[in-house]
Length: 194
Image (tube, rainbow, N blue to C red; front, side, top):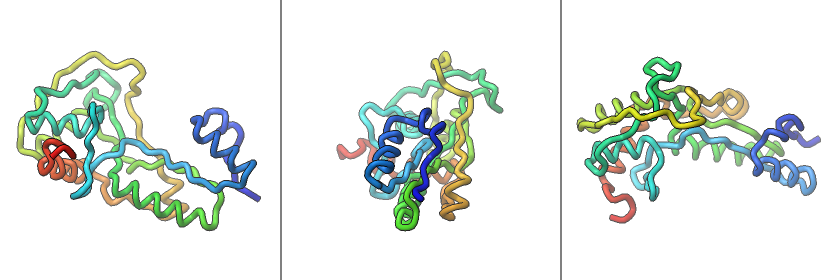
């Protein structure tokens, strides 16, 4: 019998997950929903280069590279250890390994649902401090008003994929993630345009 998410989850699932659910129910499509938290880090040949850039680690690196004057921290009065938002950053290589495990598991199972995060939370201030430490450069921060809807803490519970597929993130500390991003951005200061 096909394994399917309970209907209660279906009602609150994102639209794509509902489409996959019904494609499975009606057509037998096997699928894996891999829910990323904050994908980050780089490989030596592939980096993060968006226009406009909206992700925290590359934005802070741009400050360290002198490409932007400062980084705004939206709120410093959250109920977190340093008052700034806490997020779970997961390295792109760890995401890739989870995809490979999920594809392999789909040979035996029909439906998979996993959160992909390293299970550790790091604050906005910690990201800025880590970029400072890794780069050896100044990172100017500015405290700004909170953004509407930002929760204080978002950390993934990836217990299911760890237990069911044996997935273990290789990059579990912020410094190792930032180091890979810094190395790529330092080598590619203009992103893919250079």
